[in-house]
Length: 194
Image 1 (cartoon, rainbow, N blue to C red):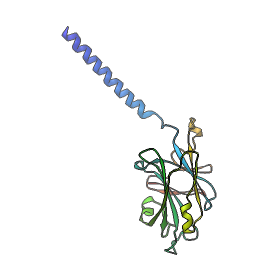
Image 2: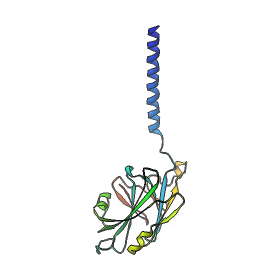
Image 3: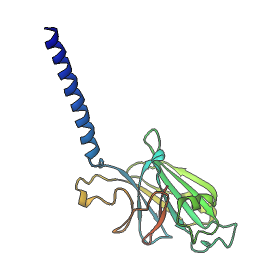
Image 4: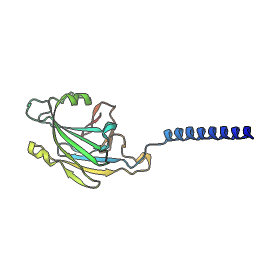
């Protein structure tokens, strides 16, 4: 009788371990969940709307850069040469968009680290809600054109129709920079994956 109980317990433990391994393997093969939040950025400095995924700050959020054409070479140290926009999810699940000004020559920059080396001046933070359009009005006091944000919800369930869920979108163009790198995204601006 004791031998039968030992065999039954061993068999139950083996089946439990097999079920655990199977569930972990299938979880690894699952596609990422849809319904990710994105922020659309429009400005008079760019011809098209830039759409950027919103990630948690710890997951290295996307940074968008809008170069200011009249000073992108940093010739005037008192004027900004670019606007940095970083949208991310806070720990409470709210979307926060940090807007800063960058000073210095931005013409040859290709990495997030190079942008971090520039002098930065925080301008404002915004907390838009889904479906709400928000204007970064704090830029006006620096004599800069307005930037507008709009939160959109990505709910496409067909992989072929997903609008560039892991990169920046400018019109029909999808831009996916390598980690730590920045790249131009059409006429919208630059997209950087920190």
